[in-house]
Amino acid sequence: MTALQLSVVIPVYNEEQGLQALFDRLYPALDKLAISYEVIFVNDGSRDRSAAILREQYQARPDVTRVILFSGNFGQHMAIMAGFEHCRGQRIVTLDADLQNPPEDTGLLLAKMDEGYDYVGSIRRQRNDSWWRHVASRAMNGLRERITRIKMTDQGCMFRAYDRHIIDAINDCKEVSTFIPALAYTFARNPAEVVVGHEERAAGESKYSMYSLIRLNFDLMTSFSLVPLQWFSMTGMLIALGSAGFFILLVLRRLIIGPEAEGLFTLFALMFFLIGMALFGIGLLGEYIGRIYQQVRHRPRYLLEAVLEQQVAEKPKRTRKPKVAEAPTDLFADGEE
Ligand code: UDP
Ligand code: MG
Image (cartoon, rainbow, N blue to C red; front, side):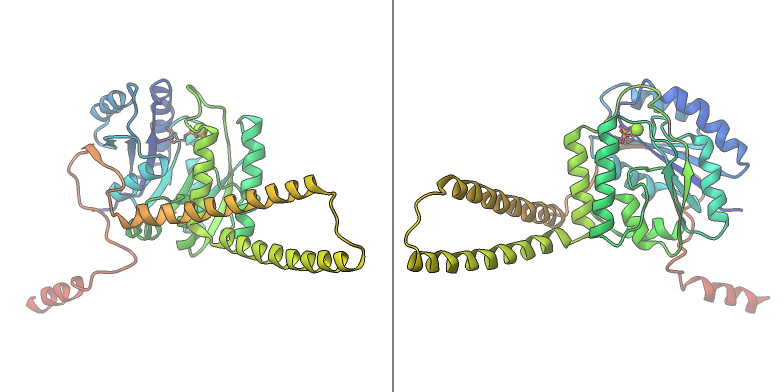
């Protein structure tokens, strides 16, 4: 029996308008690759008909379709995590449900893996999103580049391919707040990137508001770097040194020239700036502490309502930690011959 070659993991949140178009393009594209595959849809607590549509699709193609239904909205990255825990393929591709990533480009990712890479990221050829997403995305890519060791051209694109050993490593992490492309990167031995297409959303609108994008970027920065905290303590030190010098200057001035009375509003401006800095620092600490708090409570990261799948052969063997029990069994069999 040969192992399943490809798992495609797709998070779905309120995508009822676009799902049929996705099925119509995804399955033919995967059939064309002529490899064994499965598609895992993870419904992230959609409030529209998405779950029902996915159930129908499972009934239509139970041989290659598996559906995981969350009992609430736990976020795109948790949905993908659940997909990872259930997938059985030797290679895993993550894809958005909105057809912004053309499923026909899956072959490009796999071809790159054939060259010996275990993690293939993607760069959107021409990004079709609103202008403010472009600007914010460029800024956050630049910031991440500076404060983490993760090298990625386009962190926002989730159309990526991973080797089994990376998924096994990710499954061992029980992170509550995380950013999957970055987490995978830390486990990759030999990462590469390819350019893929990007289209406008086929239907519906982006599920990310400005607010949730900011939250997501905090997850990325705090999960993979302590540099924001370090920058903060360094700035604090510099300001303390500066104010000590300023104080000495004022004392000298008072002794030599006499007391000064003007400059009240300059003082206000300075104070507001410093109070702002201090509040930002407390907030930043809170971002880290809040995540520690969430993590130590050990609550389940997501709740499953149902998993629709056919009972098939068990999951592929782990590539990272080989089971020792297998060798003696073989030896025993040989000895009996
Ligand atoms: N998504 C999800 N849970 C969420 C938000 C989004 O599963 O809470 C899914 C969504 O259905 C889509 C993918 O994540 O398949 C990317 O979302 P979207 O296209 O809205 O993000 P954008 O392309 O605007 O970054
Ligand atoms: Mg999208």
